[in-house]
Image (cartoon, rainbow, N blue to C red):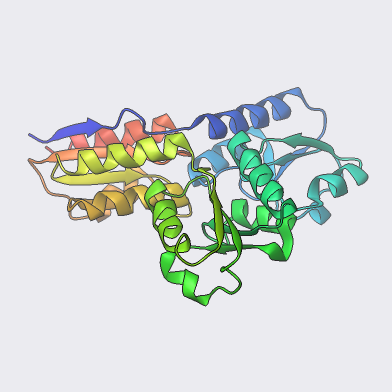
Length: 280
């Protein structure tokens, strides 16, 4: 018989839970339509569930004629909230408090004359939003390998990280910068929940035969959990739902470890666990 172990910190983080609660309350209270700019979180099951409740999604403010607009947990680019208000839309800001803290750190550093480096994905909505506020004195790098392509990093440099980045990645970039810039100020802006989940996934991966990481394929923190588990040597599968297990060559009579990204609902995790337990 197979054994299934579930990480104690799998599933929603407080920022995601807060965003969903705000969205549900807005739809239930009304009046008028309620929209989000882009998916409220990076999980297709949750987005569909909220759509069924009446929450609509728009790609831009131009698509919204009336009602309320929710700023998703990743935040929004500069000027979006002001423009929404000018269109007489009710604005519900569901930006994660940790993302707002990161933005404040970046703006403080820019204001003090630092060239700011964000360790993160420039095309991720959280990072692109912050870059829009900070301007040309701020840039994003995915890892230490991208630093040689950057200019003007020999003076005063401020270093922060996308909230869902790994602490290890931030440390590696800091170690590289400290020897090339005249001054460096580093803020630890990664989410504590993300760090805890990563450490837990690595530990679990060393103790099981197969790791199953559950969450949206477009979720950066879920992808990093899968990467962390694979780096520890465990056979690792990143899936969005239990239905995907039928398409995989899942072994029997082994020990499974299950973890999930910060935007993965508990009911999806439970379905995956049940499916693994039925494998035998």
